[in-house]
Each structure stands twice: as C-alpha cells, then as structure tokens.
Amino acid sequence: MAQGAVLLTREPAPQAVPVRDLPVKLHEVALNTGPDSSCGLATAGFRTAKYLPEEWHQHHYAQYHQAFADRDCSERCRGQAQSLAAATAALAQRTQEESTAKVGERLQDLHFWKSELQKEIQDLAAETELLAAQKVRLERALDATEVPYSIATDNLQCRERRQPPDLVRDQVEVELLKEAELIRNIQELLKRTLMQAVNQMQLNRDHKQICEMDWSDKVETYNIDEKCGRYNNQSTNIQFHPGSAKFEESASTPETWAKFSHDNIYRAERERLASVNLRSLIDNILHDVAEDLRMQCALVDEAFAKRCEEMEDAKHKLEHHLKKTLKEIGDQESNIASLKQAIKDKEAPMKVAQTRLYDRSFRPNVDLCRDPAQFRLISEVEELTESIESLKKQLQESEQSLRNLEDTRMNLEKEIAVKANSIFIDRQKCMAHRTRYPGVLKLAGYQ
Image (cartoon, rainbow, N blue to C red; front, side, top):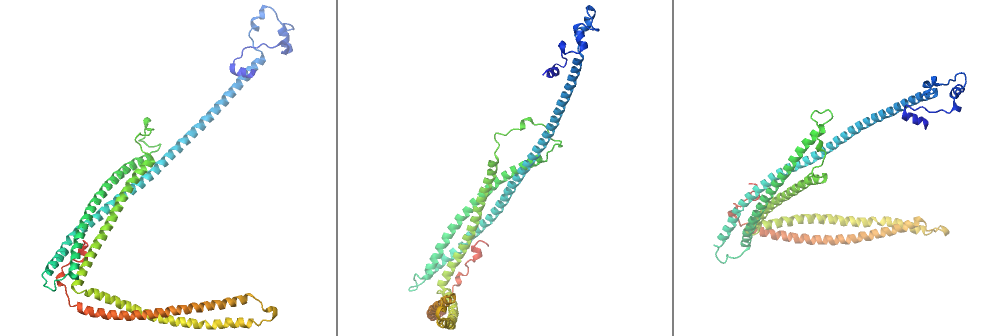
C-alpha cells in the first residue's frame, strides 16, 4: 500500500524513519553521539529535509515501476487500438460486402420481375393481335351470312308458287324455315361476340399499359441499383450524404413491392387468359356456325333430294355394320370351335388326375395318407371340373351370340335392300339452285 502511494505521488515527501531501524552509524548520528556526531548550529542547515539513501533508492524504484506500468498500459492501449482498427475495418468491409450482396439480390429480384413484366407485355401484345385477327374473322363471317339468308328466303318464296295438291308443308319447307331462323340467331350471336371482342381488346391494351408503366419503373430502379452495386471504396463519384440514412414515409415494403408487380401480372394474365378463352370461343363459334350452316344446308339439300344423301349414308353404315357383323360371325364360329376343342382338351388331364386318385386309393395300411400330393390331385380335379363347366357355359353364351348375329345379318341385309331401292328413287331429285351457298371457309371468316 505504501508503494502504491509512491506511484501516485511520484515525489514522496520525506518520511521519519524510526531510530531503532537505522544502521549503527546512522543511529549514532541521529542520537548525536559517536565519532561522527555533531551538535550545534553549524550543521543544522545540512540536516534539514534530507532524504535517506533507502528513500532515494525507493524513489528510483518507484520511478522504474511507474515507467514500466505506463509502458505496459500504453502497449495494451496500442494493442487494443490496433485490434479495434482491424475489427472496424473488417466490419466495414464485411458490412459493405453484405450490402453489395443485398443489392445484388435486389438486382436479381428486379431482373426477375422486369423479365416477367416484359414477357407479359409481349404476350399481351401478341394476344391482342391474335384477338384482332379473330375480330376480322367475325366481321367476315357476319357478312357471309347474308347470302345463305337470301337463298333460304328466296327458296321459301319460290315454293309458295307451288300448285295444289303439291302445296304442302313437307320436310323441305320445314328445313328451309329452320335454316332462316338459324341464320338470324347466328347473326345475333356474331354481333354480340364481336362487341365482346372489342371490349376485351380494350382491356388488353389497358393492362398492357399498366404493365409497361411498372416495367419502366423497374428498368429505372434496376439502373439505379446497378450503379449502386458498382460503387466501392475507390469510386470517385462517392460523397457524404448525412440525411440519406432513413426510410422514406412513402416507401413500400418488399412484400407490398412484390405484391404490386404480382398483382399487375396476375391481372394482366387473367385478362390475357380471358382473351385466349375468348379467341378459343370465337374459333369454336365460327367453326360451329360454319358447321351448323353447312349441316342445315345439307339437310335442306337432302330434303330437296328426297333424303338421298341420308339414305346413302344409312346404306353405307348398314353395309359397314354388315361387314363387321359377317366378320364377327366368322370370329364367333372360330371361337365356338376353340371352346369345343378346349373342353375336349380337358378330358385327358381329367383322366390322368382321376386315374392317379383311383390308383392311390389302393395304397396299403398306413400309406393311405392324406399327403400333399393327394390334396393337390383332388384340387386338380376340382379345378378341371370348374374349368370345364366355365367353358361349357361360355360355349352356350357364344352359341346364343352367334344366333343373334345371324338374325342381325338377315335384318341388315333386308335394310340394305330397302335403302338401295329408296336411294334409286330419291336420286332423281336435284337442287342446282342452291349451288351458290357459301363454303365452310367463307362462313368461318377465313375468306
């Protein structure tokens, strides 16, 4: 504790040393005895405020210790300073690398959404062009329906000049009235679909514009973040901006930022899918319209021709079924022969199994055992019996099927003969005045 006091005061005041603790010579001087003792006023000034040698050494020891302690403290301070400088440098580098990485990740996110928006814009533009082509088809198809309508009404007016008793409401007149009504309904449907296509094209353009604005913002943001990502400690265009380390009040969160683009793309995709569905619907409508008109035209022509084409188609179908029936009769006959042969083929295995069982029944005494062979032979007989019964049942069904096929063959042959006679009669009719009817491609809007 005394040494610590020395370190703090650095220039300690003289301390009184007990007389009994001094060396002999100093003890004598202190007591003013011995050969070196002096008394009187002559030595009074020399004995005032003097340090003893031990105090002198103690003072130097204290100076040495203080110097050592100061150097040690300085070395620790320098070590801490160097460690702190290295740590802060590493921290600054690490945080800058992390910030650069985060900016890079943000660039990837921006590139992703920018690419998605650009793709959606291109898809919307392409889809709008395709829908415009379908709109042109609708307009052409609507114009093409005027000719069939004039033909149908002209035919009805011409048939009004028929004389009794031929002035009847026959199948031809019924089909002509159906044709006129069908054309009117088709025209209304095409007009409604055309209006729907115009509205959908406008929606496509609106959402394309929204996506383009979002894409433009993403491009500008990407350029800014790309410039920020290239900044480093050696960049010449960096400077202090004290008030920049804050969040803007109007700034969005990553979730709302991603949701904004996602919603734009989702709505654009929804409209694009609606446009795709509408195009598919238009294509189906035009295809069905053309098919319906041509089908109705064919019905009218068939009615004019005394249903000649219908009879021809029925005759071909009957001949086709007769051909298949004859083939099936041959196949069924072969099947019946195969079933009979299969039943016959089971006789030999049945004989073998039953003979084995019969012979094994003569095994003497204890050898008459219910061994696995006996069980297997019995099950074999049962399986063969079941197989034969199944084959016989199948044979009966096949024979009944053959009889049904024979009856069908006879009926088909009779119907074919009837249709051939009807076709010979109905083929005398013609319908040259309907040759101006538009084709399928024109009715579908392709021409």
